[in-house]
Structure formats: structure tokens, C-alpha cells
Length: 611
Image (cartoon, rainbow, N blue to C red; front, side):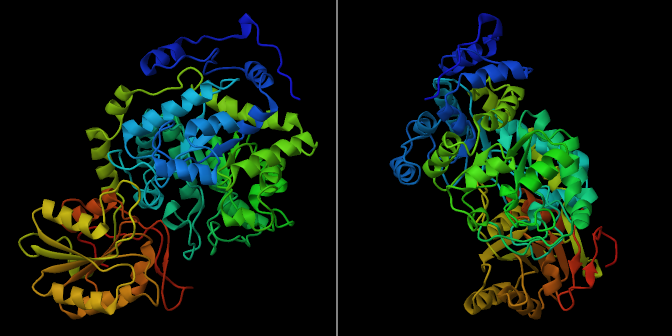
């Protein structure tokens, strides 16, 4: 049985005034003790010594939970929690497993509205501070912006990584992160799994793509460091991912185990620079990748479970001593070689600190507990990771200020200034790839009637979408007569005929394209519309490679995402209310010969330039 160490003496107890003030606002009692932002390791070690073994194991886990409330979720969420986790509520999750962190998802109904998120965060903190050894929770999410957003409107939505890569402005990247970080912190989310530090050198990458800043390692490195600075100045722990680099894969690690064939020299040249840059910028946490890199570890274990990669390279070679968090342990990439009970133990042995979202928390939690009881893991090894986690919590001020307030939400989230700045940043990222005979910009006088057709993928959390509707609405706001017709990612023959018929009498057709392949019926849609004689403008609403598969359109733009802020910016560029300033951050290869480049990195037209 684990015995608690004696309580710290009065000399070691630190001020609780800020926590008490927060308690006065939230109606929650302050913890029995609290640390300052500059707490030394000795104080944190005393705190660790008070934890039971079960509490220590819990501190290592960051877990999902369903529901909009920590104590009173909807019945459907209670049922899901009971089925997947064995608890009813977030508060029960913290009480039973002593988890050190919780991750929010829109699909788990955690992020409905800013005040609701803040209340959920406060409820989780109440539960954490009611534990026998009270330690605040570290609440996290994936708010990359662009195509990966968990917190939607009315929070400010900003351009994603590849869009920022097209803008090329480190100051814009920093400001975007600072805005995003301030709004996350206001609702109690203090660890963001961004920025993506992967260098997207493979156009066929199914999982990274526009989540990367681009294909140039040095350009990516500069933007990663800028976003680290912005997030962390706003009081949110940034997390660069996915170490040692997920940019050259053709397999999605959510569904399989990718292998990276880079030599160690290629890794050092292509994949390592953004992580080196993040570390130099003082990154708070780094997320692992469920990928195999034989040149870095001949055992062909996933990097998440590889001691040569996480300890040998990340810790020892790159000198990183911050928090290492796994990518989700529910992904197939980490589950293909070992069972779910072995994965968390092997991850800790490799050098991981935080274990993120296992498919069965009960299996994973008990596996770690048993590994310590059996001597496979030492309690000292757990203490090493817990110390890093507590250092981060102390740095973020969570011991002194665990709660957030409604007033803080109101003065920070989705402010007019933030929204206006997001629009300006988005305009600077929109990239004009083709403009035959200077067709753009169009005017209401010459092209007043606009038909918008195309793909309507499921929108990221909280956007108003669908994309065709958003594009048409922005044209209408600018005085055009605009009609929206969704034709889908794989338009049927009937939908294509409907679009062709709708083009009659229009002055221009705008087509939103989405990851067009050689066999995509989107090619047929564009060709049939071009054949009507009505001018066609295409807007790539995800990867910018679509242009290689399309012919006959008068102009093509890359928006890099189908979130509202980037789509509205694309319309303003088409209509001449903003000038295109974006430049490709990745090359576009020819469709008939991928060894040849159709448009190189840096390509992007301004109005008045010839193709």
C-alpha cells in the first residue's frame, strides 16, 4: 500500500490569494495550498510526494469525456460516458481516475458556446481541486484553425497553417496564435495541440496536407516558432506535432501505421528544423507521431513507443526537457503492433509524459498501475513525468488561477477587433494561381449574376457553412446577385446536369473544388461548365493541387480551407475588394508527369500580372 508523505510545513505553503479571489468569483473553495508561477522543483516534488500511486498514475492521462457540463450532461452523453469510460460525468472521471488533463472535442459536445465551455472548465477544476491531493487539471484541445477546429463561432476562426504559409508573414502567424490563445485561455483551455510542425513534402499525404505550413523546412520552422511565441504569450501551452515528422506519409496514422523512408540525414534536413525551432522558442509541449522511421529506430516501433527517438533524439540530441504528449492512443497507428494494455507502458518507457485519449482508460490506467506494482516501471519514473507536467501547470498559473470568469469570456472571445484582424490576415493568404486575360477582378457591372457550385464537405466546428452558401452570401453582401447550388465532392451525373442548367443566364460560375483527383467527377463538372461558355472561376477549398487536374477555367484561386474566414477572403479577392497576396508554400506538380512542377513554391499572381 502506498503511504502519503507528511504534509509540507507552513514554510513550504505558498500564497493562495489569487486562487481565493478566483473562488470568490466562481463560488468554489480555494485549494488547501497553491503554487506561484515561479514555483521551484522542490515545492513541486513535495506535492508529488503527497500523492498516492493511483493519483500519480492519473496525472499522466489526458482523457476525453462527453458532455457540455462537468456534473449535469445530457442523458445521451451520460450513456456514452458509461459505455466508453465507465463514469457518468467529467467530475466522476476526475474523481475515479485522478486524470491530470481533459481534452475537448466538438463531437463530444464539449464546445457548444464560450460561456458553456468556461463553465465546463470550471467544473472540471472544481473536481480536480476536490481530490485528496488537489492539483488543477490541464485542459487541452486541437484548435489548429483552418480545417481542424474544436471551438467554433462566435470564437474567432483564423486561417490554418498552409494559408499562413501562403501569407508568409511571421508576424501574422504570431498574431493569429496570440488571438487564438487568448480566446482559448478565456474559456479555460490552457494547452493547444498546435502548431503543426510537419513539413508537407508529399502532396499525397492524406492526414497532414493543409495542416502544414508548407514544404520548405526553413519557412515552416520560422512560422512554427512564431506561433509558439504567440500562443505562449497568451498563456496557452503550445504543442508542436507530430515528432519526428509526419509530412512525408501516404498513410493516415488514424487508420494505419505509416513508414517514413527518410535517411537520418534527410530527416535532419527536412523534418527536424521546425522541431529545433520550436524548442529554441521555448515550446511547452511536443506531440509524438504514430509513424515508423527505420533510420531513427531499426526496431520499427512507432515513434510514440520508441526510446531511441523520444529519449535518444528528442531529449538527448535536441536537448528538450519539456512535456512530451502522445498523439491519441486510440489511433490505429499505435495499436497495430502492441495491445492497448502495453501501449501506455511502452510509451512511458520510451520517454512520454502525457498519455492522450486511450480507447479504454480503465485498461490503460490499470496497465500503468500494474507495471509499477510489478517493477516494470518505477515510481521514480512516474515522478519524473509528473514533475514536468506540474512545472507546466505552475508556469501557466493554474495553481493560483485555476478558474475563468464570464467577464473574461465577454471581453476576449470573438471581439470585433479579433474578427477584423482575422479577415485581414485571411486576405493576405488567398493565392491567385491563374488569371487568363486578367479576367479577375470581376465587378457587379460586368458580372453581376454569380452562380456558386461545388463541394460542400462537413464544416469544421462552429462555421456557418456549407461552403457554397458562405461563398454566395459574401458575393451577395458585396452587391452581386448570387445563387448557391451544392454539387458535392463526388457530383452525380444528375447534379452536373443541374449545375449546367443553372449556369444559363449567369455572368460567371464560381466552383469550389475539393481535392480533385484524376478520376474525380469534379473534373467533369468543371469541364461541362466551361463548355457552356459562361466564364468559370475555381477556388480550391482544401489542397491547392486541384489546378493540375482542371482546364478551361478563366481563373483559379487557392483558399486552403473551407472555413468562413478564408472563403469570405477569396470572394473579396475575386470581386476586387482585396488584392491577392498569397504565394504557394508547396509546389504543384503536373498531373501527367508528377516529376515536373506546374507551379513552384512562391508562385502567386497579383492583379495586372500575366500568367
